[in-house]
Amino acid sequence: MDAVDIPLKIENLSVKRSGKIVIKDIDFTINRGDFVGIVGPNGSGKSTLLLTILGLLKPATGKVAIYGAPPQSRELFGRIGWVSQAASNLPKHVRITVRELVELGTLNAKNIFSFENQKRRASVKKAIEMVGLQEAIDVDVSRLSGGQRQRAVIARALASESEFILLDEPLVGIDREARKSLLKLLDQLCHDENKTILMVSHDLTAMRQTAHRMIFLEETIRFDGPTENFPDLDKLADLRGIEPVHEQSCCIEDDSEEEE
Ligand SMILES: Nc1ncnc2c1ncn2[C@@H]1O[C@H](COP(=O)(O)OP(=O)(O)OP(=O)(O)O)[C@@H](O)[C@H]1O
Ligand SMILES: [Mg+2]
Image (cartoon, rainbow, N blue to C red; front, side, top):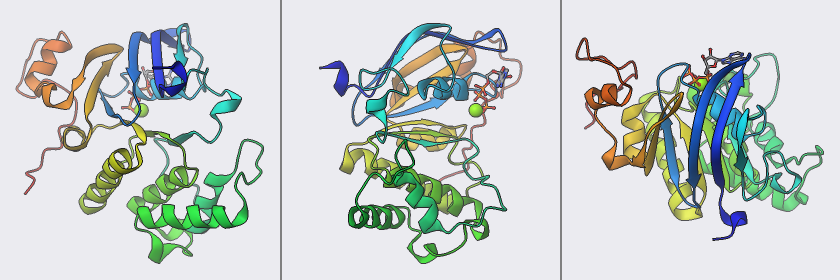
């Protein structure tokens, strides 16, 4: 396969923050249509990894290639959608409707609407429908619930028609029903629209149900493989080189309320 067809290829990556190595020896590739989940305890470097993929942090060693190009390359504009960890904490004082927020996704790097008007309106409408917010389209974002706001931010990424979507903890602060519909939506995007998804989450149960492949990151990659091979919590302690003290020796939150 040509490098330009590979959404993400990371080689020998390490990244420092405040002079200290935070992640190291990272190597993995993500192919088109993959749904990859990244899990790991607090402070294990998950957001650092995503910010490096986006080009907001620079590697100390190694490299990141997105569709064969370095992060932030011109040819990548509009091809990558980003839902940040703080997405649902949009500033409260900004008065903006759902439609307007989603429309921002169709702006290009020069802040010029990248599509012609008609196409833009259609893709904004479609994105809002996909996340199930059509009833709230003209509602002020500040009046939405946390889950609705998160979905609005995802709609913004969808409206850009980006092929590769990165999400950092999109499930935080979302109730169970909304979480389910969001995961279903992401799954559909992969299967029906051949989008590529890289999602960071603490919610192991949710990840197990949706991601095709899981990466366990704690400074470096401790596990990378099909979701069905992802180890149970007690085995994770082994991966992390930790002697189990209590049954719950791993600090990942396994949000395994009984599903029906
Ligand atoms: N701006 C920063 N300056 C210096 N160090 C930082 C900065 N942000 C994060 N770090 C450190 O880098 C390490 C990795 O942080 P990171 O935010 O990538 O972890 P994370 O896996 O996303 O955690 P969480 O699950 O809490 O979101 C932590 O030790 C953290 O203290
Ligand atoms: Mg984080």
